[in-house]
Length: 372
Image (spheres, helix red, strand yellow):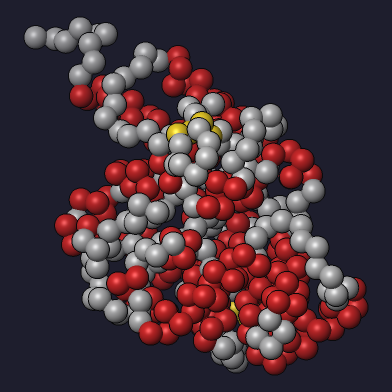
């Protein structure tokens, strides 16, 4: 018999999910430094299309509870609800030291939920390997580090506006990506003057976000921004919005659902496939160019600085001795590289700072251009 047009069968639910995913895919094509107004307009169009159709029961878990287990950095920025449209602010219910609950996502918070859904369902072993193989050719540009910094300066920092929850005022006073690199390097120098390798990590870290530039492919936000994590093994609940991994295809492969997955205990993070993003791209540039002589601790920090769940104690069974020795430095670097204005008494400025950075780069990098 022919079903009633208004009846809700599993196929109708699937079609509607596909339509929703198609809209989400269109939104994901915006680059990390794209216009926040355009992102907001697309988000509202996506929500309006959903509201015009009748609701369909869904077994998918809500992400509102998952944000309660967000990283400490996310919680720190979770304030207020008076921010301008296009900036996702997570409003917490409850107080004290308890986990609490997050309020329902409003229209201007849909963009942050969409970001986590796209990232957590698309960062798979196959995707990470494909991206690494494609960008390992380093055929996008030939640039020295100063030239790469100039290109980086043409991009807007959109990650902090989207995920940091700083609001309109924070966006207005936000650092540029180049200014943040210089500030981080100076913070590292002042805090640990004898750890020159730490300054290098602070100065070079933002260059991975060149992935968002049109010249480098205008990669989608979810494949550039945010924290990184291993793929090919069970996902840690400490990863922000971990519930969204329920739609990740790797969850259907039994070998990827165990704590070690396709790895062996103590294999070391150098043998682990990480989710694709800015840190992985920068690590490729620094390891696949001849003449680059960065110290191993610098390379380690450049690759794992965004590995926030590691700093909370996850994935310890995969670490080797060198990885464990770097854990204190990881926590120090994550604190020194926070994206905010810092008062740094005694910091260098102007020509003195430029000369110091030029001397620092000349010790470890070739004078000619690098392949990007």
